[in-house]
Image (cartoon, rainbow over all chains, first blue to last red; front, side, top):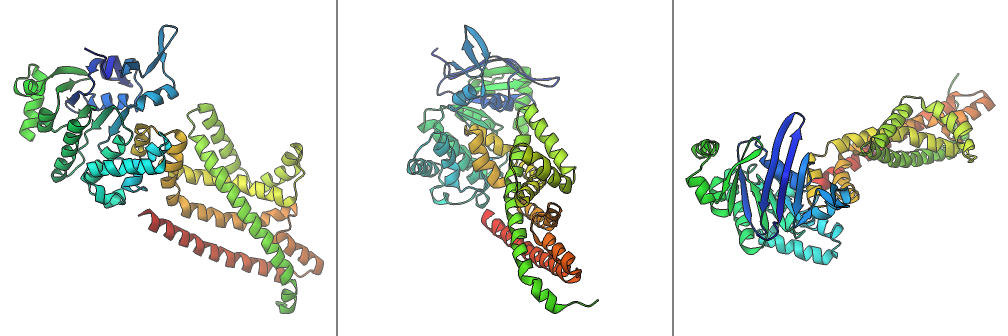
Length: 258
Length: 220
């Protein structure tokens, strides 16, 4: 196997006395689509938040694109990375949040231009063209001058996807991106993610409760339970013939509710 | 003792001149307070515990001691010590600015704490620098809601400018006192000064409401 795009090497995370993730080892190949499922409190969102450097890790190393993100090599030893290194490496990662987190004082277009202009230092016109193109791609070309408060939840989430893509990340993280949406708006967001998967070469990690979508979209499903990967595999296998008792229980509960 | 209209009219030009000094001290003092307040608020949020702790201590110290004492200290001790021979006006503006800067910092802090965590996290996810996060994302959302509170401090600062009379800055109150001591008639100058403060306070309250309204309109 070639260099993985994302590698968790013995990563652990504790909140006080609580161990949220315990010695996580996980490789994700470039362009792979991985769905992360599991009961609440199983550590699945923490996986994404650690990748985005929103949470510090308490042990282990995270690698991005063949390079250590959380650490730097110095004199043959791995030492914790400083803020500048974290910042440089996380430039390869984009994230979409459960609650959108759009900037309410900026139009959809401005939301998508802010980081390209200030971080990538793109000229304004170029950033604007890129933002407009992406908003078109998510089906909101006619809403680019709307403020977030003037958009529905599904539309806001699509702007958030365009905003993350404007930074041209190699890895996209989706953290329960449809959980805060009214049921009739879920489809439009999932359609955009589907399209992304087809048309862009992106490594995608998504924490989701949409089992149907995970089954159809993901190359691999990871079931988290109590801070560990209890089972993983191709979705057809996982969903039709789960081997782990916990996976069976979880899927039964979810499918009954769904 | 009745109100002497002729005398009141006679001293009006002198008082009007002093009123300009009062307004200048107010505006300069408030600009300083608004800038220092923001600096205090940001330093207090610094990740470095020494910096944030020191700022918190200084702010608390200034807030908890009277303006009058700070005025004397600045004018007679601190500024001369560091080699500046201040005019009473300059010392007064600094004292007002620093004192009200600490009040303003609490106002900014409330505004900053009102920003949802998701806004900070989105800024990290987009890889914005701290500078751009504050300039483009946090401050434009944190400041408009606290403009009314800042406006209240503008009016409060304005009403405290008579304290500058203590170091003989030639603002309204000290001029009124001088006139009184020259003629032994205090009723007219002090009444006029009171009326001026009343009128200006009402005007500025109206202006603040206007600004507030404008900000609300723009924000939605």
